[in-house]
Structures are given as C-alpha cells and as structure tokens.
Image (tube, rainbow, N blue to C red; front, side, top):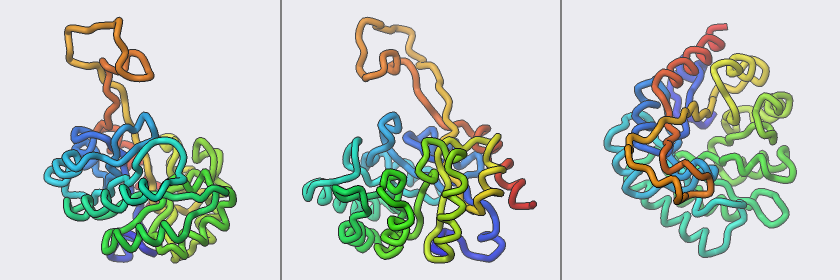
Amino acid sequence: MNSDRGSKATRDAILLEICVDSVDSALAAQQGGAHRIELCSSLIEGGVTPSAGLMSIVRDLVSIHLYAMIRPRSGDFCYSDEELAVMQRDIKVAKQIGANGVVFGILDHDGMVDVARCRRLVDAARPLKVTFHRAFDMSRDLNQSLEQIIHAGVDRVLTSGAHEKVEEGLSKLMQLNRAAGNRVAVMAGGGITERNVRRIIQETGVREIHASVRVPIPSPMRHRNEKVAMANLKGREYQRIVVTEEKVRRLLAAASDTSRG
C-alpha cells in the first residue's frame, strides 16, 4: 500500500491524521500523538491552501508528517486553467518548505475525476505523497472515481463513503476499501470521534483515520465591538476553533484499541 509506513508492524497499526489550520492546533496534534497533520486555512469553508508563512512555521515546529491542502478557493472542485496554475505554484511552495505530501481533488463538469489534470498535479508533487480529498465524495460514481484516481497515480483517498458523516457510509467505505486493495490507501474521514472510531475501523477495515477533534475557545480580548461582524457567522471574531492535545490523545487511544483486537 502507498502510505507513510515502513515496517509490517507499523502498517498493521492505525495511522491518525489530524486536520489543522493553525500553529497551535498543529502542535497540539503532535503532542497528542498524531502521526500526520493535514494543514489548511479557513476550515470553516472546508479548508483552502495555507499561506507560505503558516506552512513554514508549522514545518519548523512540527516533526511529524505534514500534508498541505492545495485548494485555491472554497466552493466546487472544477477549476479554471488559471486556478490550476495557482495549484501548481502552491505545490512548488509546499515542496520548497519541506511538506511530506499534498492534498487536492479535481472534478470535471460532469462530476467525474479530472484524470489528466490530477496527473499533472501528481507529477508536479513528486516525490511528495498525494491524497485525493473529499471531492471524491462529491463525484458522480465512487467506484469509477476510485479507478480514476488510481490511474492518476494518487497514493491515498479520503472518503466518508459519500455521506455527510462516515458512520452513514460504512457499507460503501468497506466496499471501496476492498476494491482498492493494495493499489491505493483508503482513509476514513467525516465526523470521526473517540466514540465511533472503533466501529468505523472494525466494520470497514481501514487503517487510516482523518479527524479534526476541534473545540471552541474564547478570545482573550477584553474589548469587543458587538456591532460589527467581520465574518459570515456573527461572533466568530471572539472565538477560535482549535485542536486539543487531550482530544487527539483520546481518539488515538480508542483507535489503537481496535488494532489490538
């Protein structure tokens, strides 16, 4: 299987990836025992490409594997030629900064994987590893899309089985994992918690888990102007959503329990 693993013992263990969008969250993920982080910006919009500054500082401070989101904007996953050029440039920056992998997904107008464009980005990313993100879940036909991303040379696909929450897509996720075999890693993501991770792993057979485990924390600012909203969700100016070390640690413990049977 194409992954970040080496020995058989490591491959048999559960690999935990935590999605983060700040330095604090990246450090908490590492301290909690995560094996890899997916670094994004603006997770409230589903995640877009992090700035060069954020990637660089996180790379300096975090020793676990770092995968950078390559997504030039929020919205759909059908990109213009100019947006594709942005993605290629962002991949180059991620490589220069020292990322271990990149994460992207491209669909065509009919909702199928844009194999040619994905291949271009895969080639641009090498020798970095490549994850096809949950644009996969938005595609027209998951079985065909799985074969298309394999053909494009992707190493891993993140999926909930095309449902809002992975618990609702367990049967499809199990089928996809079996169909993938050793050709591409299937990583489960979408609403994974310490309470459901055991069932997800046992019922689907996946060995990689993607989660955010974030909680809101209040701003330290004492002065607040409640008349002005700087975001679509009023009040977010005085609140941050961050990963906590304890939540990562508990999720990893729950996931590891399943690997021991």
